[in-house]
Image 1 (cartoon, rainbow, N blue to C red):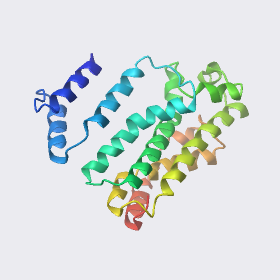
Image 2: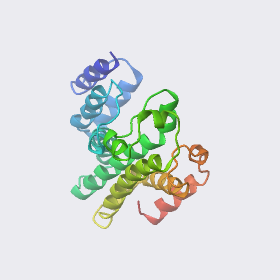
Image 3: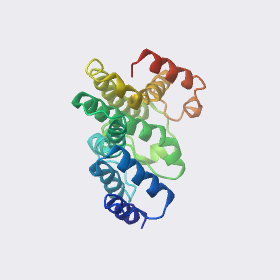
Image 4: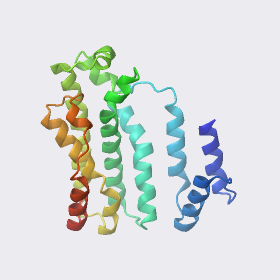
Length: 222
């Protein structure tokens, strides 16, 4: 019902008939003010509808597709709000969104496990002989860490690709990409604990993150 509500809400927003609901009204204002593309909003809703059954991703490509249609779509909308229309910025947004989706999946693994759910890509788990039960039991053996290493490496690769466009992306777009700071911070932390996704330190906040964000913003890099 929630998905149907948002599908109808997006349609109504683009017909200038937003429902009397606070979020919908603000979204309608943003659409009018920044001429936001309907396709990106619908992709977010449609992709969430496909994943209502909360099953594990069959492979890393499926996880990347989910991230592209949700996280990257949000970044495309952010770029539109900033008034950016640039193919290099779009390419960077695509890769950063995929990295964000992968890191979010990794970061949430202990939480999902506490609810008896596993979302890590099945093909990588099978490659290293890791079962869902191994993850639910918080197994910290080498083969489990190898799974995490492979998935984290894919996120790192997307960040690297996004940064390869750095010189071509308009500086005005950089604020949209500052989430790379928190993504890189998590990837560094997981590398320091040898890819033990259940290590307690991964659940601790980095109090220096606001400072890192400020420095990255000041240096005009992402």
